[in-house]
Amino acid sequence: MAKDVIIACDFPSAAETLAFLDRFPGEKPFVKIGMELFYAEGPAIVRAIRARGHRIFLDLKLHDIPNTVKKAMRVLSGLDVDLVNLHAAGTRAMMSAALEGLTRPDGTRPLLIAVTQLTSTDQAALEGELLIEKPIGDVVLSYARNAAAAGLDGVVCSPLEAGTVHESCGENFLTVTPGVRFADAGQDDQKRVTTPARARELGSDYIVVGRPITQAADPVAAWERCRKEFLG
Image (cartoon, rainbow, N blue to C red; front, top):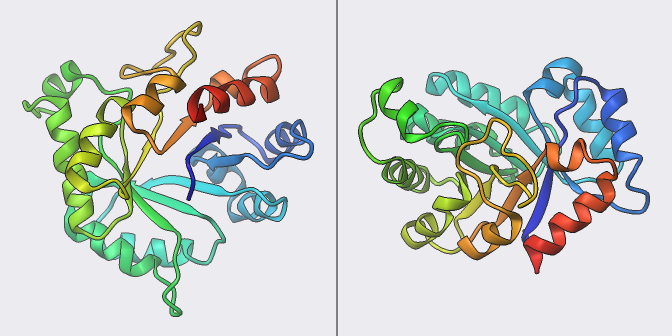
């Protein structure tokens, strides 16, 4: 998959989501379907967006015992999506089980990536709430190595960690990075953020961008600006 911008379609309904995508005539942006939209509309919204020709990142962040995640991934493998994720904190055993469940009888499957640490988490929260005393960059790198050892295709991390993940896990190990904002915009609830251009410089393969595009007065112009800054 070539580098690209993934639009986070964090809308509460199919009607709002499809109306938003209608604003991109002739374009088929890569989109993310997260928990809010999927829980509201279920698999039908995945099929509806796929029928329009969009690539889809199904962002459900599975995290449970290995057998439960394996069975859930088996269900998700029936949806025609390009990218699925889970939490790396579930251990290598869970990630391996997920990969097994996601793989169809013919050997095909969507790409599978693992969330390392959320970009809303900073060092203070890591230590004070999660009781993890290592530097956040070290934690992310350790989770990425576990994901690679389990056979996954990449991780979700901050752009700030993309370079070290590639150095440790290989250039073909995907880094999908939220926490991207335009230089002239606020950070919202993100803590570890960069601009699209800086994410490119740091080695991100894909950037996930929500509100700077979806809440823009002109979402198409914001998407085009984001792609220009990220793709160069």
